[in-house]
Amino acid sequence: MFTRRRFLQGMAALSVSSASHPAARAQTYPFALGVASGYPSPSGITLWTRVTGLAAAVPVKWEIARDESMRQTAFLGETIAQPEWAHSVHIDVQGLEPGRRYWYRFTAGDAQSPVGRTRTAPAANAPVERLRFAFASCQQYEQGYYGAYRHIVADDPDFVAFLGDYIYESSWGKDHVRSHGSLEPYSLEDYRARYALYRSDPDLQAAHAACPWLAIWDDHEVDNDYADNRPEDGMARDEFLLRRAAAYRAYYEHMPLPARMRPKGPDLRLHTQVGWGSLARIYMLDTRQYKSWQACPRRNRRGGSNTLDIEKCPRLDAPGRSMLGRAQERWLEGALGDSRAGWNVLAQTTRMAQFDQKPGPGRSAWTDAWDGYPAARRRLLQTFSERNVSNPVVIGGDIHAFMVAQLKADFDDPDSPSVASEFIGTSITSQGWPQERVAKFLPDNPHVLLNDSRHRGYTRVEITPQRWLADLRIVDTVRTREAACSTLASYVVENGKPEPLKD
Ligand SMILES: [Fe+2]
Image (tube, rainbow, N blue to C red; front, side, top):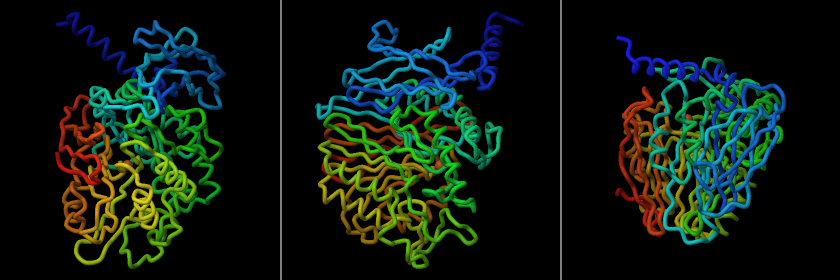
């Protein structure tokens, strides 16, 4: 029987199916990629959108208000969305009040964007009782839906920190729920299409519209396992830098990055710090652009990662090798030294703790993570004590598993003191190793308190002056958008005690 209810369901399905194809929607609605904000400071925020479906430059009005109904306007203005920047808009609003919620929207012609919600950071050094944020990484589009973001939105965090692999350049894995529908990107046009596809996802859009984001990239925003100007395959360096320039530009065009991050050719300065009053400082680190080439690549490869016995690769430990590049290292040392924040959160992309992948005697290392840069890791961990850094906590992604670990002054000495805590969040969708494979390595890594590759999800963090609390959040499935979410485990770090404890 055809009821009114059925009719409405049919209408909803129709609009969803036309909406689900970004190109189809773009013809009718210029804000089909949504809105976003990022990089809160005590007085400012960056607002982002990208107008689609137009060829020429187009004026775009923006407004930011103190209320959800957009009546109490704080500031407004107009900019020109330029086709050479894919009609992306990055508005760095200044003059806002600290520690406050704001709402914003854009207008192009007759079309109005959805209203986004954002907030400014608390005033510098202001006492702050609580910071709540979520961190996420690794969202291979084909391998699942982004239902985890519904739960992030429900948590109402102060911000989301995204820690790499926002897109994937390649199609891999099994049991796909949807398709990239295009081959691996190389050109600017290719990367724009790939980012637009990911940004067409409604759950990802909702998370961007719900709160400000901070973001760093890992390898898949450009190409698997690249380091600086070296890809894993044989592509010439000049040619690879053109590819990197295209990928970085498309990244900028699709993320709420401040205008000062606008790339110049293959260079985009992404690393930065964000303060949260006296409570916390977050360091967003770039572990790709300035990275020394991975030592000892696989046979018949010119670059890329390897898993090897450390005795077979003495230059792994060369002191000049760096994960961040020496300039970013010095910047970070200075910033950590200056910091008077109670908690110092280093957001980076991969695993910092040593992880021996050879059961029994001897040690095997995966060279793309910090195990491939042991001298740089020692330098950084020494900085924590030399600069008297208050409560350093490292967060990361990349391994498609949760990992909670003690960062040790000497990982090979079980009695060595823990100098910091590390929390790696699992992937939003990207598939992980079988748990049996992870479990084989755990006896050789006693500083790793938890390593779980069975689940997809995100990490929810609450910081107070007394303690850090991390909830490891897992979704039941990535095969539907409506997955339930629960907490696998919670860990705390007490003020002044540099190691995680099970809550
Ligand atoms: Fe990944």
